Image 1: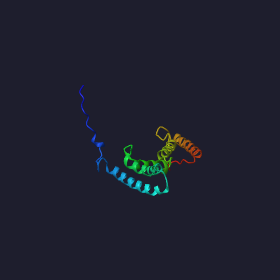
Image 2 (image 1 turned 120 degrees about the vertical axis):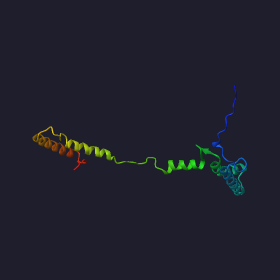
Image 3 (image 1 turned 60 degrees about the horizontal axis):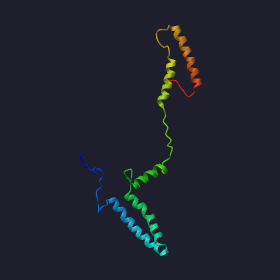
Image 4 (image 1 turned 60 degrees about the vertical axis):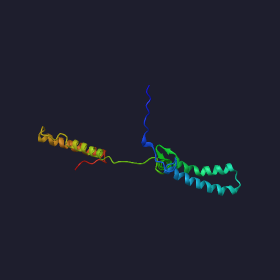
Length: 154
């Protein structure tokens, strides 16, 4: 069996800034280190043990380091957490959105109009047309009384 090396996908390679670190990683490690040293210097005189000081520094530095070193779904941690907070906390869960269905209203008005003009052709005599018109007027009036929100096209 022939083994052939597969070329590496160059789209996922990030440019290195200093040593093995990218700019984002470097600019998160440096502030975390500086802040960690300051916190350790301020907490040490309180009489805490070394383990407690390390735990305090780790709790303070962990979010800063996570923003620079960890990716969630191809996004930096701070972008991911910003999106999560926006969608889960700030944005309402149920977004009321209602549209006015104008097509339905027009269809109902057309139905009333078609009922009104039903039988309006030349097959009927003048007398039959008058009777048909009178019957349609009664039906239209009855329908509009039953449905007061509907109006015929005038």
